[in-house]
Amino acid sequence: MVKYNQTKLGYRKYSVPAQGIFSERNMIMALMSLKDKEKYIGLQNFLLKSNEKKLMVSMEILMQTTALYIKNRKSSIAEDLSALKNTQKINIFFSRYDSAMRSMDELIAIEPYFDFLPPKPSEEKAKLEGMLEGLLNGLIKRSWEYVMSGAGYDPSVFVKTDSEDIYKKFFAAFEPYKDRLPQGNLDTLEELRNKILSDAEESLENGEHKGKEGFSAVI
Image (cartoon, rainbow, N blue to C red; front, side, top):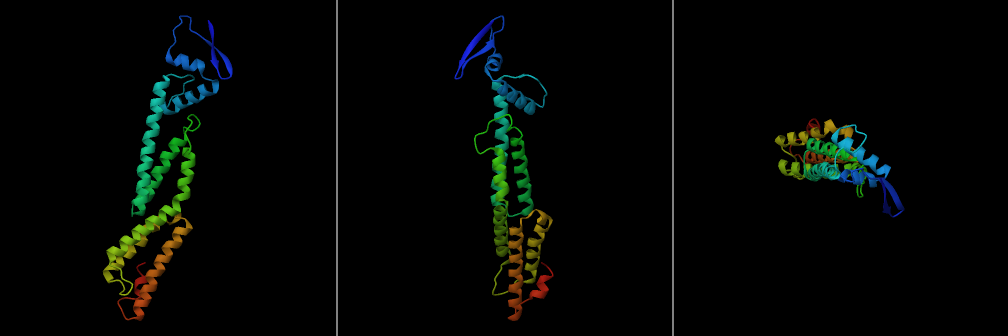
């Protein structure tokens, strides 16, 4: 038997099972366009790691599964972004940055099947990539302020010998990540290094503590 369903574009024909019983899935599949059906089947296959040619679960279950998939990754991204804005450690920074990127890639993977409200995950990823230098400068600033506090830094009285290790560790922490640092961040680190050396030279001229030559060996 054939019936017709009224739509904004007119009437669409769909088949009714001989017994006249509509399951939720059959109703929705009958009313969806071919394009929509392909999208939902693709979403189902991605989330359930299947390779079906038709929708095997109800739309309710599919939407619940999709919502959970998105929620878990967005929650993880939010935690990662918070860490990026607060950590003082470069290794934690890049661990969280990479984690956020992975979660965004997992959301981007369902963009062909799911209509996200803007901004889409691909747009959010591009935004985060564009924020990298600024976020790293924030990290450098926080870490440097901590070092200044921990070393008891005072430009008028140059650093004590036991403080040299603190500065050495500060700069050494960034070495494994130099290839990932934008040029602006490398320039910032070089400015800090030059500041320490300049203060050391001034201290030497004033006859205070160890001067530039001695300190340059550790940074």
